Amino acid sequence: MKPSVIIIVAAFALLAGCRQDMHDQPRYKPLAQTDFFGDGTSARPMIEGTVAWGETSSATPDPEYLRIDPARYTGKINSQEVDYFPFPVTRADLERGRERFNVYCSPCHSRTGDGNGMIVRRGFPQAADYHTERLINAPAGHFFDVMTSGFGKMPSYGSRIPPDDRWRIAAYIRVLQFSQAAPLDVVPADKRGELDGNPVTPRPTVVQGVPSGQIQQ
Picture (tube, rainbow, N blue to C red):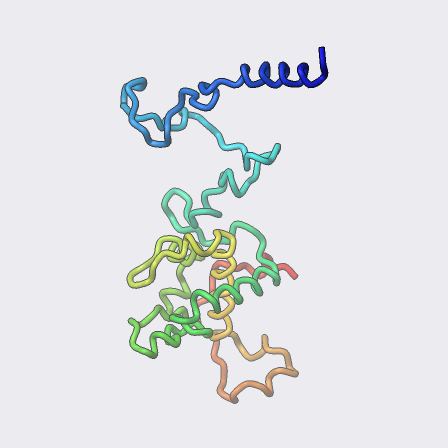
C-alpha cells in the first residue's frame, strides 16, 4: 500500500473517533434551572463541613484564603470589636499604613487626622476627628470595622483595601493620635527645635491598641 493511502486511511480513522457529542457533553450552565435537583437549581451549595484548602494552584493551605482568624478579617470576636492587632506591627507596616492612609483617608480626614481634609473644606460633610476622646478610646477593631463596612457618610472600603492594609491604616491612626498627645520628652532632643514652641500637654487618656512591645523595628 502506498504511503499516501496509509496517511489518508489513518486520517479517516482519527476523524471517525471524533464525535460531536464530545463537544455537547451533558452539563448545566451556571445558575441554570434543572429538574434533577429538588430545589430546581443547578448551582449546588457547599456540603456542610466543607473546609477551604488554599488556592487551587497550591498544595498547602493559604491562611489568608482560609481566613481562620476572625479577628484578623472582621476586627471582631463574638461580635465585639477587638482592642489589639492580630499581627505584630513593624515599622514597615506603619510606613505602609501611612501611605495607604494618605491615599484613601486623608482626602476627608486630612493627613493629621483632624477631620478637615481637602474635600471637607470644599463642602463635603465633616469627617471624624481621630483626636476626640471617643476615638482615642475606641478599640483598634473599630477602625478596621469602619473601613470594612462604612459608617455614616463614609462608604465601605472593603473591596479596595485588603484586610492587612486596613490594620496597618488603623495602626497609623494610633500613631497620629499619639503624635497629638505625646509629651515633649518623647521628641528627640535634636528635633525639638522644629516644634512650633507651643507646650505639648499629654492627654489623660492613653492611646490604646498598639502596646509598645508590639511595635517592632
